[in-house]
Length: 457
Image (cartoon, rainbow, N blue to C red; front, side, top):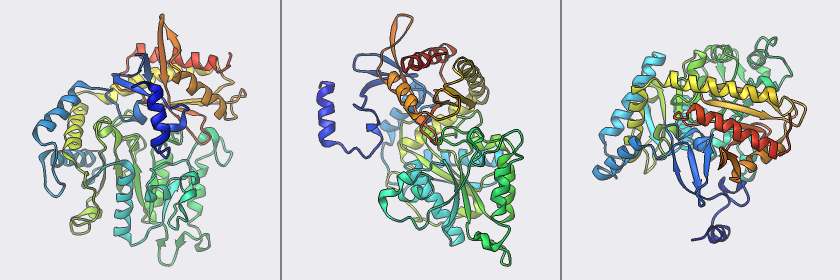
């Protein structure tokens, strides 16, 4: 069927409620392999966002394909009221990893997606405390179920769905390039943490009863590196200072690793960079390399014992499904067999070096570049090095999606993802298998997009 016919059917019969229709017309891809997507003409599109950081091992990974087909041939389906070995082994591996990293015993609970697992974390908190109010960050993104929307800072995701009585209280994230308080990173002395701590100085600030020694807010949902918010990386001292405040007031720290987990930042979990231990952790995406919608939570033993959180406390028909757990188990085996901490950090350092070169070349249009492992950011500005420009960002994105870039006499496209508070940040999350040659190609193609969008040195 021709692309024009598919687009006509899409326009007539498909909901526009998901994220497909940000580009007009939507792009149709026909196949994928390695770090590339291919359109109907066979044009390779270098993918620098890999399905929002889900496909860390590249598209059509042969080893993971083999694990998937082996499970299809053996145990493709099983109701979740029964056990299968892959679920047990995957749970055990994740729990053992966290016990080694954080010195805390815990258990793992699966669901079908990140948003659903965020909802499970919210249930766990309510089950433990009997209360429902939580803190979350401005710029934070935790999903679009009703529960996850309540702790995601964008009002846009809630506006049409009525009143959210359990909406989080949103705290400024340490976004140093655009500090909420107008401070400077090298002289602020973590001013933002101190402002948060002030909330607990008096009962009349509404968060704390000093006589009862109890906070009305019982948990804080964090992303160690903000994902949709623009891959914003906090100062190293921020989370230890925050955790001290939370621990002193018996407030749980919930670590959302859905985008940053499984070595995206050069550590198994993003939170490891900052030297704090979570009470609950949410994970997903890269657990199955994007081949199956499997996500989950890890929680401290005392929060998730079978006595406290018994069978049926939460459920999805396809949670802990046989295909997803088999792929997830194989992904973890792959992570054990190679030193992905070194691999990701080395490639990330090289990519960031090339981005800094590009920033020096276009200082008026690239206000900030930063990175942790292979989670990198490029902040686009309106010709003054600071004012955010969604317009130029959109133009660069659209140039990449035209598939009319060139290198070495060959035609290419460039797949980018736009995020950030002002939708002016490219969040770069390439495959762990990306080569230096492909990183150089990405820089070359990105610069072509900039120049096609009218930017000059």
